[in-house]
Image (cartoon, rainbow, N blue to C red; front, side, top):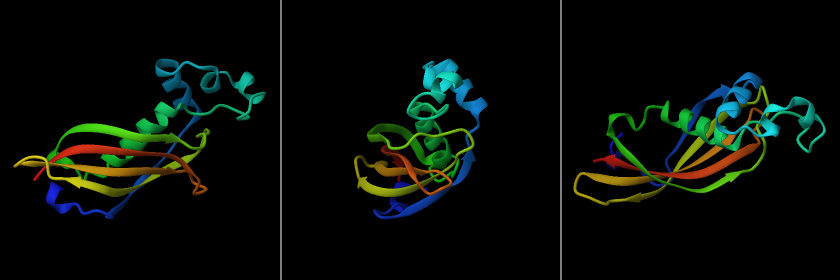
Length: 141
């Protein structure tokens, strides 16, 4: 979509993705090697009662689901900011995530581009909000 096709209050919903224990541990072993993502025995005794996904993985999955909607397509130029990032609830193995996206700001910044800011709210299969953040990108007009 072009910049001029977006409007404040516009909403989109993504497909969903299932988060497996194997994917949690694979991601964590490379990018966030902390015990709560890798050590099943230790996490059973902790406050989460088991392995949880890294917040960074949750953010990456949220972004992936949004991008895979294909709405930016070839019109996206670059990201400019991620703000108000909140990890609200943990993501557990076998959680199924989807994202609700709302356009919250439009900034006409140049002759051929504008900045679209969306709020990304990620929910699990029990409709609990687990993540929220704002993403701003430059989009062609």
